[in-house]
Length: 544
Image 1 (cartoon, helix red, strand yellow):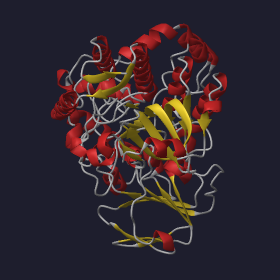
Image 2 (spheres, helix red, strand yellow):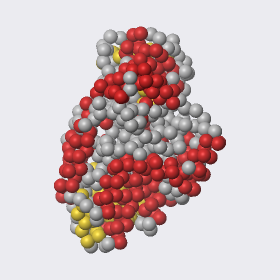
Image 3 (tube, helix red, strand yellow):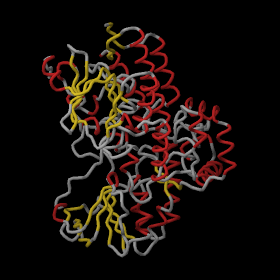
Image 4 (tube, rainbow, N blue to C red):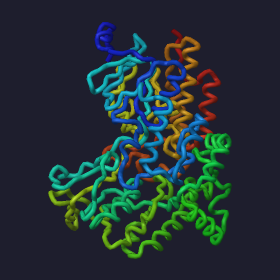
């Protein structure tokens, strides 16, 4: 839809150089960089405070799966050295405190409007402005429209018959109450065993009278081996700031870890077992980096998968429960999950497991959950059913580019979700996406990906302003080539052979498609830099 100039002037209450959606890691750093460059900027977020997904994800056991020395900003050495993490894997309250610390340090809140949802963003070709409407009825305009809405921030609540009839309480891990939920003495049912389920199940089990886990797909998970940091370790890490930052930015996954230059098949059985046992004891992502062909070679993957399966059968005492908990898909082609006492929790007398593939959930009743084989009386239901990843948050807004074409229409077929570099999409001038589809995004340590995107966007905007260019837009042919390259790289891996939220398989009716660049953070950074160095090759730049 194209408005007249008169209509716009009547509706618009404020005009900015840039509008940013989201006040998590992405939005905060984008705001900082825009403001430092002298651009008037407004950030909108539906939450009551900063934090993005860490504002909402307050469920029991919520914890980051990137090590805390990596899971923070590196744009400011002063900031890095001022903050002290308490342990290897930070819990949600600590991450939220960190982001509030950042907002305070750089005085960011004065340009953020909280408790405000963006309903629509529409580009006007005649005026070369984006017009953004919020749920409070206001309209603002901006030359640059930037999304920092996260890849996994739109909660997925499955459409199960009868939820409205349930007489107890229910919660979703992605929108948890701010006050503590008391599970003591209660019968709890939790649906879902992805990352949030695996983190929350051991914590809830310690408090509940009984916990029933409703599992659709068993998951691979390895121990986090979390531990407190000592002051000497933190001191040495901070002294190594510049090398650490360089290593993170050049690496494949945004951490100071590198794949061992060796195939799983290169090691004899005894040596391979020793390597994997050592990685298991180190915990975290160590197994992922133990060999270089886990996600590209089926035989290699199966050998590592069998090692993790053997660990499940060793830990879980009941053979039938262990069988139900044993995954059959490729290892590491779903989100790599780490845990604290997840499999051990099924040895508790107050925990039971229901395989909903063997006995599907029929409906939620007034008193609990009825499956094909039984009915379970519950006081509380927890939905640990994940998110509508990659595109879900975009589709909650009505974003329209040239000729009124909506982003949802353009990306209607999941396999044809096309972008250029995961930063822009053709037909949407002066719109930038932080960790958008077809960027490396979720296949690594997100703050590193976010910093790279923000810095590229900021450099691009400064180039436009210095050269009096009114808008930049991805060329369709560049977008097609990038999307083709992303698909070809993904098809060389086992990721596309596994149904996961990466492919949209967790959302009923969502078209399938793998929307992540799998070439790694460091190589991707080089590609983006080369595009900029070549005068923003693949983009249409129109002077004022």
